[in-house]
Length: 511
Image (spheres, rainbow, N blue to C red):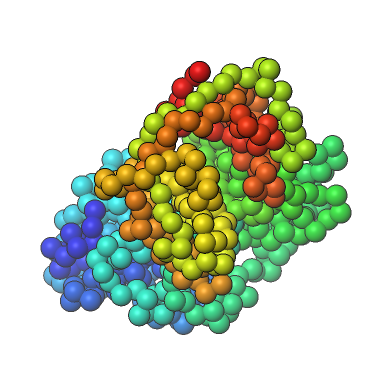
């Protein structure tokens, strides 16, 4: 759905879930501003038994000029819109929620539209935009505004609201995993002072008590130096505070903090050692029952009650505690860690392969950014740090993945073609100057090339989760899962790396 499709309606209600949070308020504000810019009669509402009470949200409403109405009865909608008492709104647009769900009061309208980032739980109307892969509904609306060329950057209050919505829904950005969320975080022109003000009013005395009690119940596992903590129900940011405090404790290298809610479980994960990426651990914990992600040090996720119960697990505190104990134990039990600078592969147990002739793409990095620039290349698979030199080439693989390399290595492996390059991926990679924050898309600078089919490797399928610290990036591991391949250069057996199973089958032929 596009926001412009909503312009066929005149009397419009934008509704967020009961007891709204910062993300719901930000997303709703953005939709209201867009509709008002097109002279629509629109009001922003929420239902339920309780009015907004948290101090940070009350500050947000006041400082960012968010006009929202708490309504309990259908006739109040007509009053707000100043239409006949027996007339229903032309459309209700639910944001950060889905019409008919238990967390949003049901009102009647001639049409229903939905904008959300949660899992789809029931039938969606034709007018809907639900992106379950985004960390916040604010991101969804921001991207929809960009598609309509709406000048978000000119409205600092809206930008601040969207930034704060993403920040709070992603546990201070620790749960970001999709590049679009990161793009919004980096590009918004927000008020730093306002964000600081909201953050400093974010925790109540009751939440402080919850954090203290949770820390007293910490479980520590000395063999692998991690802690598990159960908290009473609270905002995700409180889980993050507990996690940060745990990581300050002697001998705690990583931790998992969680709280059980009626419909699911929120988790917060932290790590301070290079052998454990917090985002990867969060995804492992949530695998099959929810979603996890974030950054190297800070991450989080959500586990859905329905998915737990489908695995015949009782939704009780003891069962859930044991579930987390088993997931953490399994994570550390089935790991192989390889440090390429200290490793010599045994190629006698491996098979030799040659790279296929594949039509792919490449970008000369200095066409996009000057040499000596410290950058981050953002892709759907994650961020890649890159210091640009005169001979840096960014190769683009068959699924849109990127591989920085030197011009010398590129010329050994690829031949330039004259044909137009067509990108195969979902998200167009960008490159960002770390110092000044300037970000550019790389695809306008991309050219076609073909792999020459002379690169040879030894490889074997791996049967356990394998973390490889490569020669070119000794600080960050590349994760291989059972079924992926560990590969070794035929000319340098210390050049060890991981190739995903799908990519391997499309890229290499057995010799």
